[in-house]
Length: 202
Image (cartoon, rainbow, N blue to C red; front, side):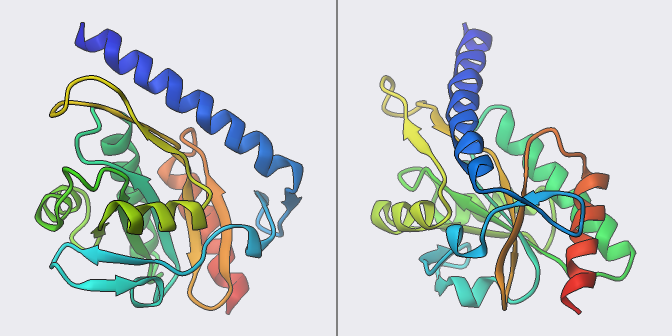
């Protein structure tokens, strides 16, 4: 039964992401780094969330360098751990090449994801990955700013799943949104494209 539930969740989330990607593609343009992106004003914006240390932080506190930003939740059975591990691996690849890159995980499950929970989760992937959570309203504001989708499934009040989009954003501290990565991007591809954008910014 568990496998069936996971499959259904992934399918629904993929369907939501498919709609999102289709919308993005309508305004997409080719970038010098060989990937597509939308206008920088379309994705990203101010948010106020709670860090894994319990401190209230804003987007400018968190995105102080080129940063990979991902929205998910810690109880996620398959997608979020895999994507977070991949983003962390991309960060390690970039660091090995001398690039200063950040990684951020923003929870879309504020009811369960306390600061300590997101902190324990991110620590599994990269020692510098920042975990963020907050109130339902704070998370909603951040999600809308980044054009992400999430919806709590009906059913069990404790072991529920959350459908959500799965793109990873590359955000720059000065210019904002640079590009996004889909689930089929490998750590190597993310590292290569990110390095290109970082070199372009210099």
